Image (cartoon, rainbow, N blue to C red; front, side, top):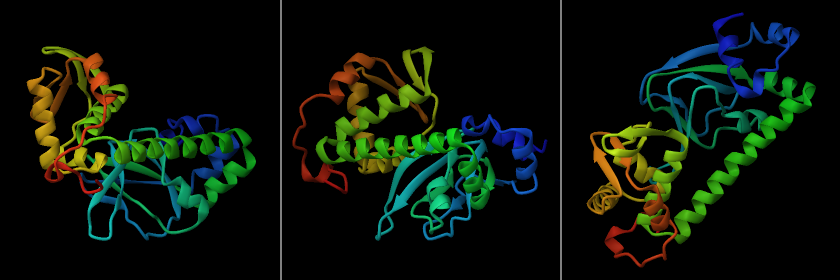
Length: 244
């Protein structure tokens, strides 16, 4: 088995591949390594393959007409991405960028279509994956429309704690095992880097988080959950994100 297929079988969706399917895929799959900040694909690129992240981390986002960036998701090793356009056969609508040095396995679109047509469980798995990602984006959109910048940021911190949280002894709490810049967080919640910096400072002064160099520890999850669900407050226009 080639290295590409070994990586492919680390993806939950493809662990059930039988010997015949593996043999057919072996000459088709290829891998590529991307430097941090290098695009994996761009909007309007032809979607001729779906991808499995083998190593590293990839961020998925969209660009507005004036060049502003919104981050939609982070892809972790073993995850499939870029599958929707590959199945549709249309151009990419989003961008994918290596958030750190990353190795990606490319699975040709036609090969993915054949696999889905021949394996109902795989087809169901891909459908569930697409549905899950759509629900996540819909929840984030509701957050952007109806919550303050503070509530959006607190909700993001809690979401990241659920995905990447690690126990911290000093200070006690939950450390986020993903390093995001203030600009990255602003791009996720539809705000500005300056607003994220101000709100993190407020949360730290209140003893809810501890912020270090590209490190954040949540010191009171219960208080943060109350802050995320609190009443929406009217913010000064200067503090609002670009979609307010």
